[in-house]
Amino acid sequence: MTITVVLVDDHEVIREGMRRALEREVDIDVIGEAATLGAADALLAHVLPTVFVVDIRLPDGNGLDFIRRARAHSSELGLVVLTMYPGDEPLLGALEAGASAFVPKDAPTAEMVAAVRHAAAAPGTFSAADLAQAVQRRLDPQRTTLSPREDEVLRLLADGLSVSAISRRLYISDSTTKTHISKLYTKLGAGNRAQALMTAMAQGLLSPPETIG
Image (cartoon, rainbow, N blue to C red; front, side, top):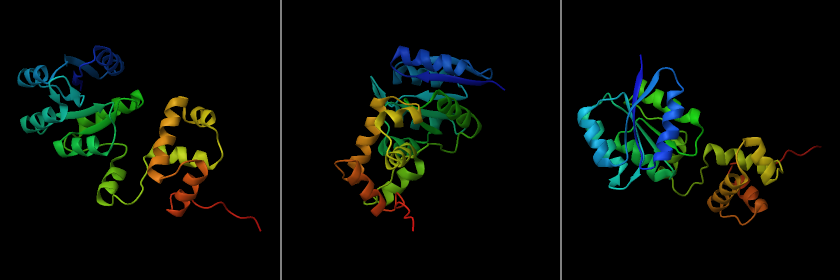
């Protein structure tokens, strides 16, 4: 069965990239695009795809408002939020609005395709890579929790790897690695690697180095 998709994003280049990535899949067909909430609402009224992929920040409003309207329109509609503004508030906002999945725009293409497939197969459930940690942070804001990627970076820092070595290991750019490290330092209240590692061990995020006797 073909999964039909409508893309809602105000950047034409991003829509084109998403279209190409999705249409490489033999069972996915992009049948419409919209650059504004108004255009998305018009498509919702006249076209019912399997899945809408929606950006949060649009010229005429917040994409989560569209997610709420679309979910009220149909409980069977797959709704994927794709945004360049990751974080707990957008992620949990997408969950509360009735989305089926949440994917950052810097995620691998395969993750976006997987989110579309999930939304098509189980529109009433929610999928996001950092969901458990985000919920944990909301329930216990005093506890430091890391995203899966931040946890990977922390462990590689503990192994003594440089920024460039971490980038190569994770297949990301040096600037992305530096961003993850900066976020780690902020979360841990640290000013350098040593402080970050000591705080992480104190909080149980890292095991202390084993001693050899």
